[in-house]
Image (cartoon, rainbow, N blue to C red; front, top):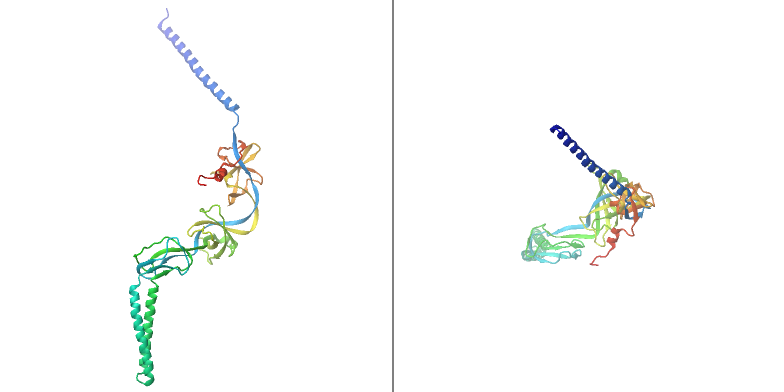
Length: 373
């Protein structure tokens, strides 16, 4: 019979053999699975990504100096009454277009009218006294000093009448120039203080753009030079104007100099207070390579585009310049005629296979009519 020690050794050998078989099977299965996965991906067909493309173009662009400006009306003011009083009449509506000299507001002037009638009566009495003194002085009944005193009294009375009339005129408020009124800020029966704003008036026929340029660019900015202006409110519109004035002094703290441009605003699209992008156009033009803004992929490592070569794409790092009407000038990285991807870039990587789609989905969505249309 086997002793206990021999039996234990035998059981241990059996357990070790079983463990080797189990773990060997597990490791073998894992290796087999990894090999099959690698084989699957190795034989998997490369996906083809649908993209839209557009060729880079060589264009003649006039170089420009870009800056940001603030718009103001050629004439704009908060209309206010020059005298205190109760609002008796309001002769305008909010948003109304008015002409120069049109009455907008009338304050109560009953007290002043009473004072005027009293002053006119005093002035008439002084006028009669002066005439009588002139008649009597010829006969020697009164002295010349009496005549002079009566003339002085007449002038004082007439001056008082004129002063009261001026006060009454201040009780009416008139439009100082043609323009469009804003929102009314007063009501009937309200007591106004001198200088209290009644309504805002803006002449929108001409808009001024105030901006600054560096002193190093002062040599290229002259009165009459062409300006191009764009705003966020009308991103597809470019407004053309000209430099109308240049500050004679450079700001010693910033090295900047103020410039003002003048823009016709017949449609009333530009409004005072807007911020706008202003481009000062230089006289000489240069040839640049341009691509659509939608072709650019922005990242922290630099801007890039995808250029199509046959059925694959290549990522190209680009150096960008001016932007105009949806296109960007490229100083480096793209040549005229290169087919750049304009949609589908998010799925692309260098060397990816592509096929050309029929239409840019972004342009198609923009062109598709809405339910309201």
